[in-house]
Image (cartoon, rainbow, N blue to C red; front, side, top):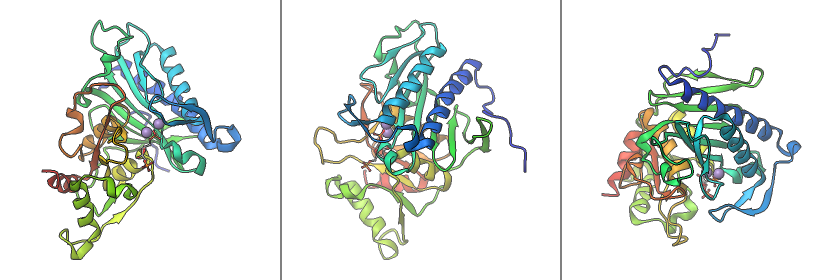
Length: 322
Ligand code: AHG
Ligand code: MN
Ligand code: MN
């Protein structure tokens, strides 16, 4: 067998940042083990609690959050953390240079059916002399991320990582407990015939998205002149991994199902890190009206519309929003 290159081939990445990423991965290896054990590790099912966003927490949401939080705060590499499962940010080492925002377990409705879930993370620099307890230190544009990644707990556990020099894919060698580089410089194919959207929300979408999807569904006799295929994993981390692997368009658009919650995906924990990974692999990520990584966040749990993936297809979708 070909000898695989060593773990984390992130050239020129500052030592502290690499140590921080390794710390996140240590927690992810533990989550991977628990996910793999499934019912045997007693992690399936829901808790009796809701998170700050009013969603029922799964046992694995809580466990994954606790693992990441403990290991990051103990490491001394982070000034503060923000998590989808925490009401506010949590202060860490005041002298540390970095802050981390994460979705400890994305796709948690998939847990109980033994389907794809993952962890998504975003690393930013803490402003100099900032108070580690000040949540505003997280209100940075996606463009300011110094690293972003996800760990997908699938048939194999995979890491997609960028530190701003392209996106690389690693696979966890469970016999050694190390992530080995298995794809240098992932590239999202520019053209695609595949899209991903929860069509059960169709009647609640805005006209731009209604028209775009209608034209895809019209196939080769419609305005797009070709047939499209649809895939939906119900975990952004799984859908984005497919897009990174073979192209496609993934969207969770604005809808009017619940007027108080027009968007589903969270800017800091989901949209920004995925946007960085996709852009670093040559794709695009937009809300329909604005590049995701240009958004100035106003609060940590803010949600946004997301359209990302193959360049030509995202541009086609954006043309309906003009
Ligand atoms: P989470 O499990 O962290 O709350 O996120 C779930 C998100 C996202 O991963 C996925 O794309 C979407 O919710 C699935 O939405 P549907 O419930 O509409 O399928
Ligand atoms: Mn999520
Ligand atoms: Mn989650």
